[in-house]
Image (cartoon, rainbow, N blue to C red; front, top):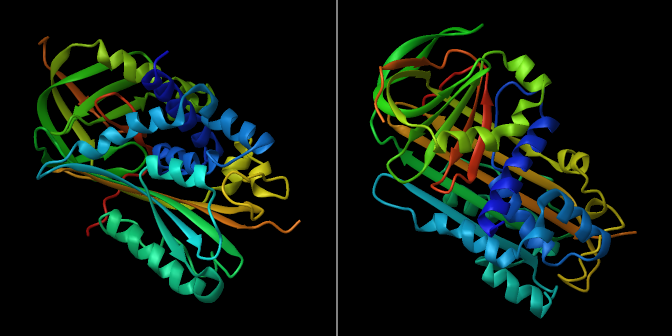
Length: 365
């Protein structure tokens, strides 16, 4: 398998596994892309069992990390007046703690900006500075990334990834009202366009293109409860691949506008997936610095807004590390009127954002 194929498999698997840790959440959005990149930055300095656990969850042992990042970083080149996708990595390091040379060199290849920070003397000031950078890099979508009290004098490092996406639909939608299952009438959008769509007895899957080689994939199960119960969300990659072989058909599409804002600590989610040593006295990040450190918390926040013009979405992942003490056919109609999954993908079908919408609402800015 190529680096791209392995990355596709890994990220879709991570989407499904992470979703299962939040399976009872009704409306959710997250970016495994952001989480994956953030953990790249600590994986390259991990050792022994800490490293093995990160490999098991993120598949880092199956690929060359730097080559994989090159595949990911192509997203930064997709930009025009109406659409863009930007990825930004940063490492905030206590100013008197030395990074190891090999680690520093690899960070630079991951395009990480390194900041010298005075957590010991002004941790609150550093927290505000990190939040300001995240706000700027996410187009004002992710605010207050780190809450008061999240960093302290004991903080040695904070590693941050941000992703910002803005995409205009290839064809602009009109506004309509939609009757959504178990919710009632909601604000929606409609378009008449040739679209790739696959319909089975169990679900409808379609691709809605933006004007920048990105797409939104909608997977609408006929019954969300049974779909999740039967773990069909583990087949997301298959649904996306099936669309690649489908013909475009004239389609009248109606779907809700929606905005979802989700996030907080995901440390327990990651421990459920099998990353445990990194969070306790067993942590081995001796490839980063000689100071014994461990992961004290992982914060992930994401936001998405979908309307008639297109989509804006952003995500940020912060890993906090402390010193360790011990063709055309007949026109079809598709109405997205019941709970659905959505996946925002690039031209290589890599999942940038993933989520589930059960109670669509749209917050006015």
